[in-house]
Image (cartoon, rainbow, N blue to C red; front, top):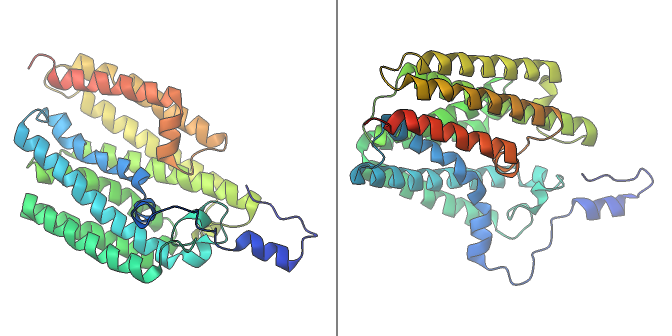
Amino acid sequence: MLRTPQHVGPSRLHIHLAPAPTPPGRTFPLVLLRACRPRQWSKNLLVLAAPAAAGVLGRPLVAAQVAGTFVVLCLISSATYLINDVRDREQDRMHPTKRLRPIAAGELASSTAVRIAVLLAVLGVAGAVAIRPTLGLVAVGYLLLTGSYSMWLRRVFVLDILVIAAGFVLRALAGGVATDIYLSRWFVLVTASCAVFLVAAKRFAELREQGSRGTGRPSLRRYSVAGLHLMMLASASAASAAYVGWAFTRPAHHVWYGLSIVPLLAWLLRYSVLIGSGAGQAPEELILRDRTLLLLSVAWGVLFLGGVYVGR
């Protein structure tokens, strides 16, 4: 956390907010890769959800379609990250960690970033159409959604959370569309509820940090800790109820699915505790660094896949 003593003069403050210098020896491909935020690509693994639940991931054609969809979403999401960072470059320079992003730090020119973003978006949509024409529609819809968020919707109270959550749902939908798998209402409801929970938790963490540091998203001014906590509780409850309803209505192997409820509920509880302790601004990092969350994720995966594949 960056703190500036009250007695520090304007010149000293200017040094704190200036773009970070470019480290020597860093090549353009590496700078571009960092600007594309490869850590965020883990979110695109949601394309595995539908084919995994249907038990068809072992089929060569399905595996190829899923892999191609993952690449497509990485291209498209990176395009949106580049545009978003170009738009936010001045604000990012005032943030203790975002100021290190390549565009805010001056390592990658804004004009170059925009051109590359357009190229990535075109390649992503073209790749989606090649996999399945309807997937191309999902890709375009994702671009429109994220573009609207960057330009306007991120400033709209509550809607900013719902739009990001919709992005998660579209990722899962892309996996189903690419492999021609029907997505049940239970699947969509669990995915949407869990997405709202994660995004609300992220806002909760950001609001707490903004209160201690004084900078952050403009939209946070309309949120309250109590309101975001209530949204987290409601979305976690909806996700749990939907998953339980789904698990006990399976025609076979309901014991495996029933047992998988336990690590899911424990995961949501553990995540809530970590958020309450001050973590959670970067969900993907929190999940990968916390051993308990990782173990619960593995336990859920084993039980869930056991229900899908055992007895086939």
